[in-house]
Image 1: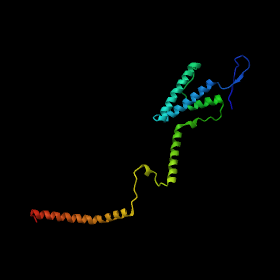
Image 2: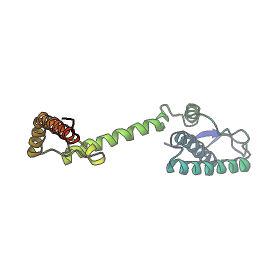
Image 3: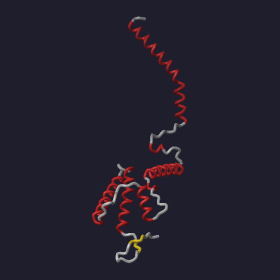
Image 4: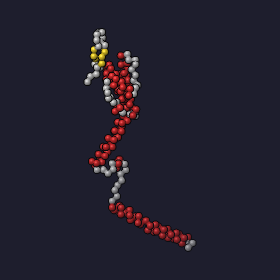
Length: 183
């Protein structure tokens, strides 16, 4: 559906209908692009995507300033929020339900996180990993039965080894005392 509005005929006759002029179309694209990019740049400032967005924004600003000079648009405001843009677009195109709230980039980030989590769970199911953390973190080795037996034996032998150590130390002390001649 094409949106038209009535403008007075330059010939002085009755009003005639015209399509959306390319000037207004370019301006709308620039303004919508700028608002989307400012919203995106707030969340992705330090990333590579943020740098690309910054460059796009500067290019759009340049084109808008050129258009201002060319078409003598003194009252074109670049800074306005999404709600004001939505109401203006509704007025121009007579849209009943134009929702630009979907362009919220914080929600996009959350969606990306949930997608990553979903892929992790799918990988777990496909590769039958009990813990996917093992791939990235420290790997705990499963102890064999012989290792477990050795550990049990060493635990059981600890008191006996302590007694042996004590007997050996007392024997060495007696030996030293005999050598000195005190016993």
